[in-house]
Image (cartoon, rainbow, N blue to C red; front, side):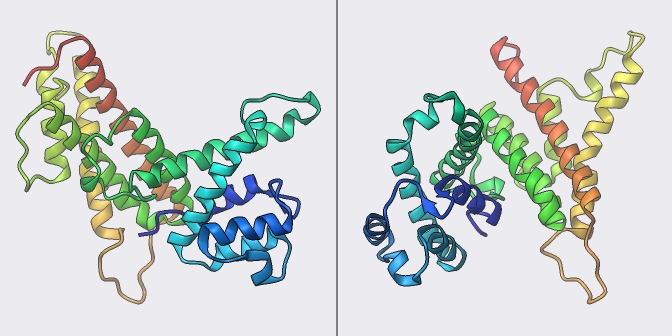
Length: 280
């Protein structure tokens, strides 16, 4: 599984490539920098401008080498472009600076994710401990929203894993028992019971109880429905030559549903922790 997507590589190129130049490097200093970083003087190797040489390398090199060079360039940028990062300088350049700031924030987030050994579609089971947080949720949401257009079939499975990751983290942190054979629906049911938001917890004496119970039941059903969709259309299953994957609109439905469920579960979990209302 790739650790960095083509879209993310493009964000780095947009940050570093300045109309054919790469940051403030001269041709010689850029060759020295890349030689020290990845053992290859890019301009000398490709015989192109700094910007085109960098682009050519990013498009054809091994992923590990690409990440190494992009990481080194990002560190260089952070040292030499503080005024751009911190929004200082001549107001004439404000619009351009804001664009670079947006690219920088994206690139910094990508590198931080890679350092945690996460991929754009992290296997949720391998990254639960100390990694699932509000920030992690935001990162995964950004990834899924991008990938739903690029690979709608793949993102179905990742929506399911996103829900599993959330539930397992809540249950593990609460020291609740987890059966390793539980499917995603059973994980959601156990999590909702722990958080006292299952249909069984609804006060049946209130006027709105029927509506609340229906909403909670539908939320529980989201996980099972996504799992069924994943089993029918997701990656990892043999398909015939006539097989057609899901469309982007189906992917958006799965992603949107998983985001709604995870946000609700996680917000409830954090609220109960903060208010001392989490019991097993």
